[in-house]
Image 1 (cartoon, protein in one colour):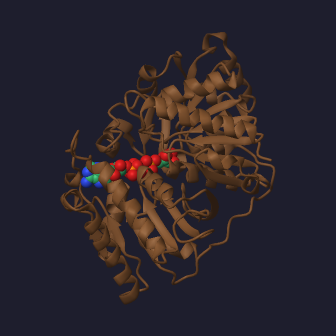
Image 2: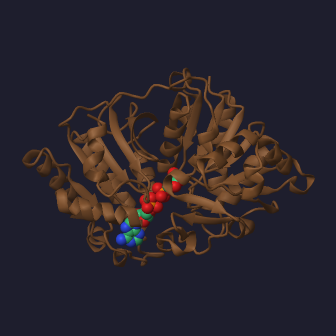
Image 3: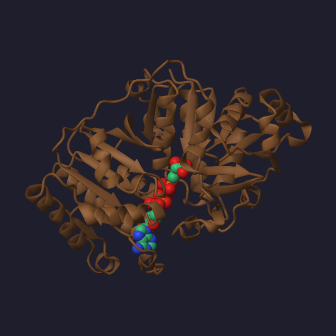
Length: 427
Ligand SMILES: Nc1ncnc2c1ncn2[C@@H]1O[C@H](COP(=O)(O)OP(=O)(O)O)[C@@H](O)[C@H]1O
Ligand SMILES: O=C(O)[C@@H](O)C(=O)COP(=O)(O)O
């Protein structure tokens, strides 16, 4: 029976956290939405469950409702500790959803305060004096300022969070963290911090271990996957899923991300893989025909060039970003997500068994459209990115009970050659 329940605000984040939990000795299942949590088959052996939501950019009321539904499902499954996973670059809109969801989970758990820990030094995210850095740059000076859905124009976590929450926001500095577990516990228990959301500095893995140890008695923690570094699961080593596919099975890369790391990966993919770019105008003019042409292209590649997975991508230059759309015209971001999801469904129906998807929102659209119920963590690819077995369920794409190997790559994660190199981890 699971004891740790996590709620992830996007799908790449869910597999990022799950891969960390597996490495820490938790047998972990990722469920797509809350409904599968009640499935005894999936839960029987799990120590931890991560519910993947597509709530990061949803309207506030929807994000709160789906997060609470996940919480109630996890609690009914036996979970007694809860982890709200958001992005290590604190991706949110001015309205939320990190603040509103944290507030709702505080009420639901009955906890009074929660730590806020986006730091993940393994992927270059650190928090010092409450400011979030991405490698050597402040968040608002990093390429995250150009994100199409959640442009991050401030690096002060407290300033980002305060307008989103009804709770006071406080900071615990690095010196207090470095004073050790007991000092940090005492600082967190200070009555001045009762009812607060507490941003905690952390610049190294050891800091995260300290934060984790000082909050083991908290029923709710919030942060990126780095905070899980300090957790210790019930097993010396949790097993990983074997690949469901075989080398040579049809494979495809679907990229809807506009992030800097992905743009470099797309440039590398364009040099090494057969590729097609999504054209927004063509999708607007005739969505079905455009998707049909893209899937025909991919199938031709499997036939003519079976060793190289085709790459279908949306952005290789920030000038590609299309901000038009409105009442009568669908936003480009929605069209891109729908198009890549439709390609995924048709390609899995045509035999694709290996999918590398770039982008969190994109991954949410693809995985949901495939009818996936659970993701079981397989071989790691790079920090925060892993292969997972996606169980498409009875009504899913590719036929009843089909398992497809998927890698859901966060926009800013992965080496430049990930679109060509990731497959060897599956072999
Ligand atoms: N040309 C484009 N114009 C506008 N939005 C786009 C374009 N191409 C992709 N997008 C959208 O950008 C968003 C990227 O978000 P996401 O998939 O979460 O990537 P990341 O992991 O990099 O944040 C998606 O909603 C995608 O549909
Ligand atoms: O914490 C992280 O950085 C990732 O797990 C994550 O959430 C990434 O989101 P996207 O960049 O939108 O994929």
